[in-house]
Amino acid sequence: MNDETNNRGISRRDMMRMLAGTGMMVAGGGLLTAAPAALAAEVPKKGGSIRVAYDAGSVSDTLDPAAGSTGSDYIRFFMFYSGLTQLDESLTPRMNIAESVSSTDAKTWIIKLRQGVTFHDGKPLAPADVVYSLMRHKNPQTASRVKTLADQFASVTASGPNEVTLTLEVPNADLPVILATPQMVIVKDGTTNFNSAIGTGPYKLKSFKPGAGTVGVRNDNYWKSGQPYLDQIELISISDNAARVSALLAGDVHLINSVDPRSTRRIAATPGYEVKETKSGLYTDLIMRRDNTVTGNPDFVKGMKYMFDREQIRSAVFLGYAVIGNDQPIPPGHRYFNASLPQRKFDLDKAKFYMQKAGAIGSALPPIYATTDANGSVEMAQLIQQTAAKIGVNLSVNRVPADGYWSNHWMKHPLGFGSINPRPSADVLFTQFFKSDAPWNESAWKDPKFDQLLVSARAETDDARRKQMYGEMQMLVTDEGGIGIPSFISLLDANDKRLKGLGSIPTGAMMGFSFAEHAWWAA
Image (cartoon, rainbow, N blue to C red; front, side, top):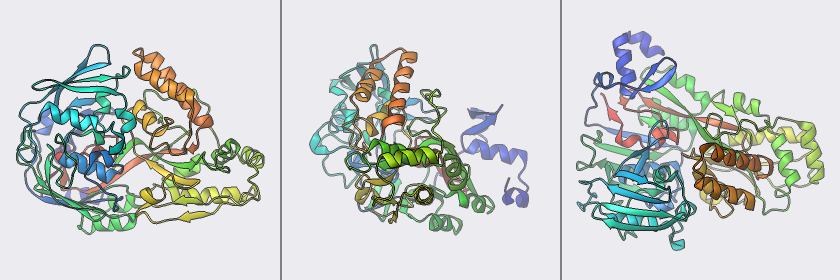
């Protein structure tokens, strides 16, 4: 353990309590949900106010679920609203304000709503709220970030006092997972102004200023008995990694995300603080836009991919808190990961061959846009720049501020970096980022065969066949897609040890953005 263990002489009993407080116990090398008796060792307390620092914040911050696109948005959504389902640590969908979500054919789904759920203003949850919340994502005027997911909904109708029938265009066994997407939380029927964030979530909105901060106070009428525990949560933005860590260790904030691997030893060596690693599908990708004559050249794309020294990126940029990627977004360990794809390796000779074919050697090329807010992108851009120079390719790096990067630069330059949070299923990931008409199709890559496989895989009930389809899609993205994914990055959060109840949900930082309803203060 760290210095705190040595100084205070933590006993085995205290250690068991610490483990139980996270809701996790390690046994036989596996991660198991703690038994009720273990959990009883440390009962969550009510009370306390915390400050939480997230790495992304801008004037584009929103309380409208359809408009959200950043991790801090997702934290707000799960603070103030509730989804029909939510994901656990194994990414299994669990019922939330839906009592059940069932189907006999994966096309027509019956959603039964939990009774006794009320909005912050006292209005009871009704089927009309669910119908409105889901269908507004289909309306082009809403400009929903998850329109491509909602386009699967043929109809959503109230079919009883506490029942909704959702019919899909084609069968999709992943619907309960899709309903756990942060943007799919439930809002009041007819809401167009979200400034009050009236939802059924664990906290009520006290104040919100885009780019500056959000304050939520406990919803005493929350439908989950006894929860939430904290009196107040303040969410602020600190984009600079070093400043975020310093704020934590100074006691100014109590939980932070996106810890730079270089800061992990400092945090772990400071009594009273800890780092939490969650292996995940998070990736920072190099985007090569297909709608530019230079970066859209397939030979240029291949050349750039061969310039990734993946092992160096894993060990030097992320200090081992990563696994090597293969230019497609399904991480190793995922049940649909295609392990038969040959791993693309660092190869300067092949890089030079393709760059010569593309006419990129000695030519003026677009700069690479990078930012501290896309994990490791600045360091990766500099490594690629140094590597490219060895074969006569002149690349420059434009390092831009984190503030406003996602609204002003992401997907708006021929060469740049993205940072994609983990998604709960292969279907959601491919639909949001690789389908031809996806709003977040980063490289503007369009492939009719890929689109056809995506739709077919949704309707496929044979899991082996479905895995084969997802494997073909990974091959297409690896070979022809306009992005490079050198690694999958572990999520690194850090917290004051007095903040309890924190576990790992690999869809994103801070328990998949849902820490607010679980966290409690032990001081």
